Image (cartoon, rainbow, N blue to C red):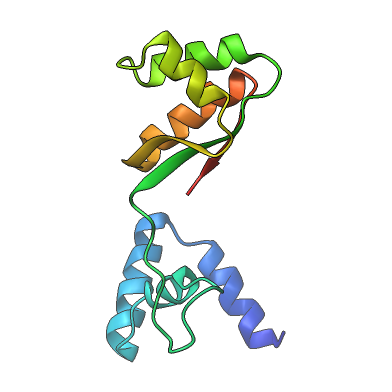
Length: 128
């Protein structure tokens, strides 16, 4: 780095948070840019469509039971805890069916919670 850049970095490191915020705002106004622009570019994933469309964040998830594992009783209990409307037989049938859809169209928090319960019980779970 040049001596000029090094001095500038040293000067910036001595600023308070409020002074830094003022500096950012002044730079945005002076150059007609926004500090958020580079963040938006990072949000586009490598799997974006070839025509340049941005990939939207998934909002609805399906919880799929890939494998119940060795402790089926714990998995059946977890299935009934996730979906209290399931009877013992229905939960048992779901646990024995690889690729069974446990929950459909739920938000990320609910899907993660269900996945955690089933994983703790010994099952292998996928979110789609």
